[in-house]
Image 1 (tube, rainbow, N blue to C red):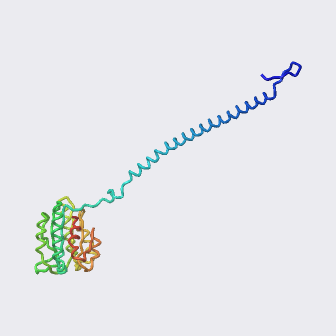
Image 2 (cartoon, rainbow, N blue to C red):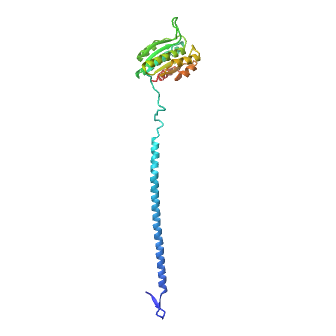
Image 3 (cartoon, rainbow, N blue to C red):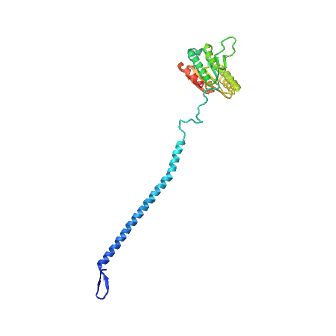
Length: 266
């Protein structure tokens, strides 16, 4: 080692040796500092990566649950019990046709419409009946409605409707009350629902509003529905419209057939 004597046998380190030693210590200290920094940075990155992974793991179930919930939502087009369509064709169908003078301009179109509607519901299993009405047009008649074809094969109705003529005025209210009463009996006897399909040109009032409402209420039993097709431009019967489950108006004769078939549920 570089030492020198001071003449008294005491030795001292040379100054340059001390300087080198100091520099070596500083170098070690600085190197250790940077090594420590790298280790700390690596640990920090590792912790951050672990934290990110944990966060992703926690978020993944939430995202999955959200997607699952979205997939479980019903489509706007999926049928539900709330908006499910009602029964299309009733097991029993009674066509009640206005054959007053008012029907004359529409007779061929309307009777053809009734014939086709009867065949359509009959093909779906409905027992079909046919009445016509206007007003008493003979000396022996006491009511304006006539029970032409009893519940049964639709082809009987399709044939009979073409044999009618027109005459008299539309005493609609009394005919409707009688038809509802008949439909109630049919429902009770068969144990199945009955739909009355009324095709009318209007009402020659033969019952006042209160009497009609009360009589119809008493005649109509559970399981009986009423759909009305008003043909032509004559004034509608407001009380009849209130009573009907479905009420439609046809001004253009070419639309009559489609409207009658729809009213019958076919």
